[in-house]
Length: 402
Image 1 (tube, rainbow, N blue to C red):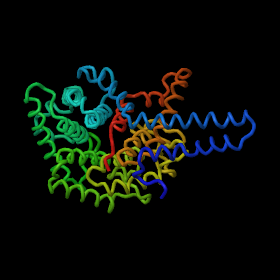
Image 2 (cartoon, rainbow, N blue to C red):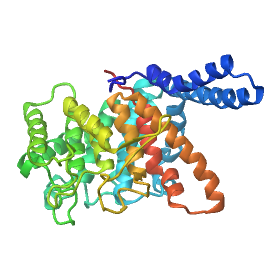
Image 3 (cartoon, rainbow, N blue to C red):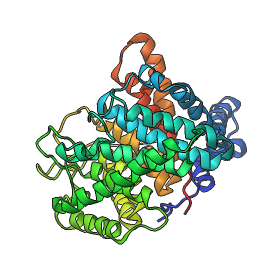
Image 4 (tube, rainbow, N blue to C red):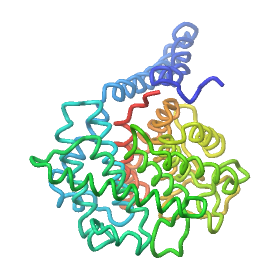
């Protein structure tokens, strides 16, 4: 296989530039007509410079810095978050979780930002545990967790708590740190118990959807548990993740080789869910996550050379766009392609990452032009949403370490 999953950023950029370089050299040495030579050399050189600029932008952390500046504005005061992001419900919770991970990774890359990143993450916790997003009267009332199935909320809250623990506390006193540390410990123990007791170790995501079991949401739950136990995962957590993967391989895998997205109704694999899992499962089941990502690319990726997109549904599917998929054009889904930024980045698949980044940049440029003609276009709204910004920040701030 020419391009492995661990293709580094420089090698990935070279593979993307190589065709343009070949065209440029061929035109320079073998084309005699000046106009034709210019028509070949100028686009090839422009494309090559674009890819080099993307590489420098990425490795130099400039892209991550731009996204961080957006996060600073949105989280300077907790009350500003909802007004600026314009997100509610599940999207607000997920955006907060992705942003918190981005902040923790950003602080690891740029240690001078650690103190501010701590405070911004603490502000995120104030948002998530406040009345606008918390489904419980008081999230610190641990007895309330078992009364209703709000495991998606609890899992993403636990991710943010894990990021806060990575960063420490920005508060002048130890009280907030100790309060959130206790919540983190209690919530992690609760989620371990909840998944341990669930059939196939998959718990319902919500309290009002008939107990449907969404596999990708449970992947997040396990990831949140491992953020708490990064140094020495307890044996119970290790066994839980191993048994969860075995259950997926044994009873929850579609003939395509990809995991079912929902277990009660045996819903077929989805692009957004596969990319989601490739990011989160890597924490505790790296071998399975690599296998999943490779199968996902073979089945769902559409390669256009310099760019790539991902299908939301299998090629033969009759399913239609929904709340999770975002808009779909020619089978390519906004959510499936956007979340693949994180999937590729966490897998160390920089070739696919830069392909998607090219696609995102081209799409954003086209949408800005089209929005002048057709304001309110759903693709433009998806590209400009704060959830999309959180996804891009999460991917840009992360550095794969192996």
